[in-house]
Image 1: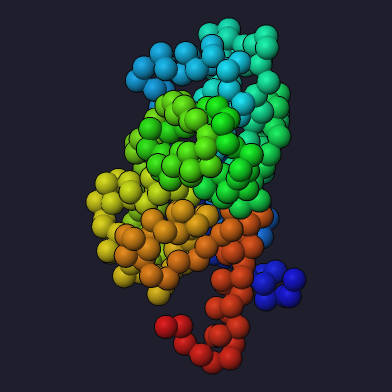
Image 2: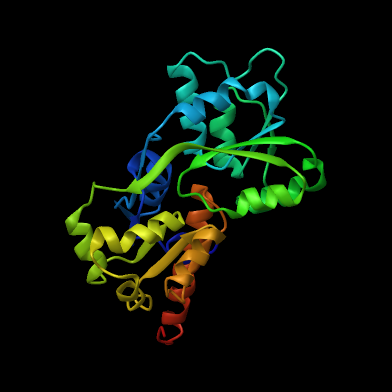
Length: 277
């Protein structure tokens, strides 16, 4: 790593648009590099309005071949509900295996004692389906996830011949915990980067801030608008953001790498006498 990249985050004010409970490692690593992390959650999570379907699928786990876990939140929702209701996640006769989207989800599943058998190389659900491919034919899959989840994953699983049971494990809602001073810093271009972690965060940005994504797009030459993962990048582009910095996946290392490369590149341009456009 060159000196410019190593020091590229020093003094940068980086807005993390999710809760601190999900962002502790990233915030710590940003701070270690001299950056100033600002937590500004755009999404929050809530229990399902009706636990009946989730409880039923946990009771029927023995009939499934795979449980696909797309997020740490999905892991915690399933494991937490099973523990709360004293239901077993490994009932007699069960043979199911867990397939996880990305190493962060896999780590949470492994720590919870779930039988992780596959971790997607590309960190999105459709890529996971494609990696498992024809082995999904005639398998029964449980897909516990958010009420706002993208429909592309179940469609991809079914294309490979899987029988998919979707269940709402948690709800994604807009956050009520808004720091108004951070909002003002974003609005007036006083921050250096804003990190979006999901399409839901993109969706809720305007609702929470009262500022449209069109207004945010007007700042994209002044601040880095960062998408964590390709699905979020697509949501930002559809919302009118043309200059998107993309982190390959949700790991803190990938986000740090994307930020360092972006700001190191900007620093080189300035040193060469070029202006940002």
